[in-house]
Image (tube, rainbow, N blue to C red; front, side):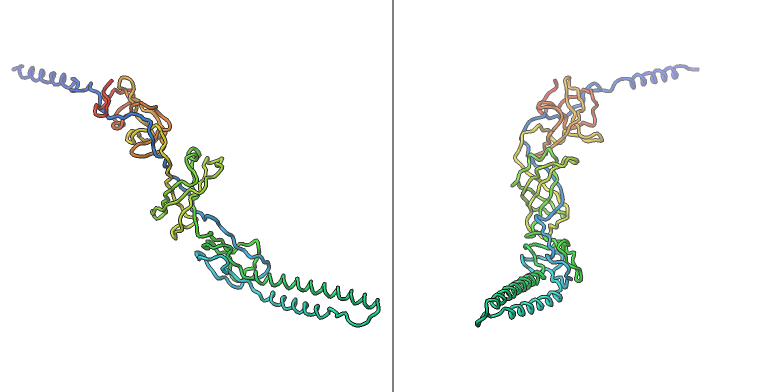
Length: 347
């Protein structure tokens, strides 16, 4: 038996094993990665807020009278009304009867006033004077009662205290009027606002008169102005409030939801390109290049954005180098090769 083919095959197999154990070319070469420097630069102080649309000022309308039935309701929800416009009318049947009785009593009292003429004894004169004063008092009482009834008659028509749009109507014909029962609520001058919730740390950047862009539920944007900033912060939510005055617009309805973009003057902050920040289940982080070109992942907190940059409210300081790509392909402690094109060569 010829053993030469067997020996040749064995040598070839052994050579193949040695070749597979050899390291691949370039295995010791660090991964090339792009990077950027953490810099302090002015960044627009704009940020987003959201909240509920509310009436700029609500007016509650009720009757000043009590015990009268509502005879007629003249307006409904969403109606535009002017100041003094009739909204509802009460039943005047009983009041009209009372006014007629008071007028008859007044006429009778005036007839009872005696005309002091003729020659009378002192005693008769005294009696006449007493009777006259009594009759005059009755006249004044009847006149006062009639005046009160006439005022009540004018109040039988419930009128709008201010111009605006009717938001709610809770009165129906047949209801019994009462000063404690609100019949209508209306938005004065049909003006609405966004009651925006603002994190406590951002409140110092918001001022009355600041411009805001408000996005409605339909996706349309309208311009608004910050009217006031609340003087206190909610102790539970740590949120403050700002009222953003909006233009008169039929699409803006109190009770709806909207969000706004508030813009302020640029503020110097620590910032990096947005590509440098990674997000996972643990939050935001950046990958820092440390001594020896070794990398380490550092958790950060972010703030404002603008011009492709993002603020670091917590994280590495100015001058630190962070990856702007390949963050997901390197491990902590791994050595990398920063790309020369970014303006930094290996250390």
